[in-house]
Amino acid sequence: MFKSEAASWFRIYEMFKFESFHMYGIISSALGISIILTQSIKKLKIKSFYGEKLTFNSKTKSFSRYMIGGIIFGLGWALVGVCPGPMFTLVGAGYISIFIVIIASLLGTFLYGLLKESLPH
Amino acid sequence: MNWIYEPWPWYLAGPMIAFIMFLLIMVGKNFGMSSNLRTMCTVCGAGNKVDFFKFDWKSQKWNLVVAFGTVIGGYIGSQFLSIDTAVAINPVTISDLKLLGFKSAGTAYLPRELFDTRALFSFKNVLILAIGGLLVGFGARYAGGCTSGHAISGLSNLQFPSLIAVIGFFIGGLTMINFIFPLIF
Image 1 (cartoon, rainbow over the protein chains, first blue to last red):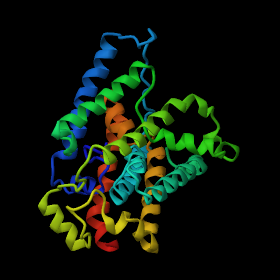
Image 2: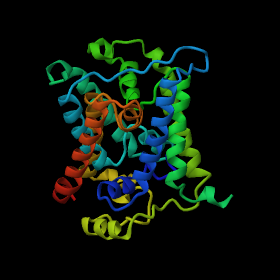
Image 3: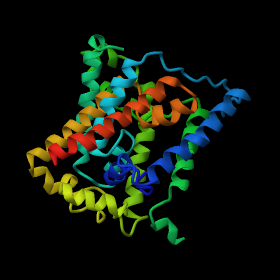
């Protein structure tokens, strides 16, 4: 994450400006290989390393929660330039300010849990 | 071996992400980083107040280990595997950011104007970081996943809801950069 610059605010900004292939290359190559791996596991009924059957959780059907939730996430992602993986990378890289982002994102998660019942899903 | 000190290209990073997802699936887990935020809320005792956080967080310990691994990865990557961490973004993007007031564009890993420890003395900066984090945490849980859970895990399992979420991520991101950035920076 750090070395590929996926944890860099600048790369996220550049991605949303469509001014570089870098981030799209990371996401699409990760996704392309993941599709092949996931679909092969399903088709070939590959067992886990422990010999157990592998099941994949389907996401519940809905439009509003994914669209509204996605937009809110996107607004935050572009503003602070990190999603929930890279924020931990930046802790390791020694950025003190990222703790504000992490604490706030914990608060945001808590707020969702608090308001869950009154939100459209 | 000099390449290791240079920024890693996308065709190395992308397959590595896919490999992590593969390993997690093969041990019967799934790839999704934002679930950790929920687990951390539970660890902090949120389950006493809100039902959403009432679950056995120990069952999610493995994912906290993954998150801790990214902390270590960030430390190793920045301390031992980098000589210059300036991110060489597109020169067009750099001049665009300079107009917005980000003079550190092209010379740093994160914008100093926002992430430098000294920038924390500005109330506006702290507010920006806090609001951004709040939106990320709230949005990820509302959408049921973030970049890893939807754009990688969900889409590779051909889940239509994940496609809606990813489209949402971009609507949000484009709105922020094109319409809200000019207002706040």
